[in-house]
Length: 115
Image (tube, rainbow, N blue to C red; front, top):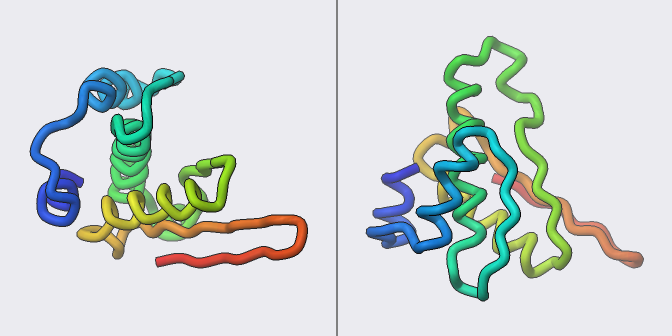
């Protein structure tokens, strides 16, 4: 995860939101984050989600590795794409263990994708 954040996302330090939220989420506690756009909210929950998924995948046995590990529900198509891109980037150095997929649905269309 760190490698992806540094080499692919070009991040050197967590934002204030991330530094406060990530340790709490890694403890398994719930988060309620309200902050301005660009404050790092997506990574604040994506990093702990991916960390837990990788931890379970490394300990997993056979068929357990392909089970659904996380479900992120967001209110807009744009945010869905953003979250998918962040998750995929975080997983870019460990795709053999865990992958990310997305589903976008509206009254007239449904689209799916994945990596």
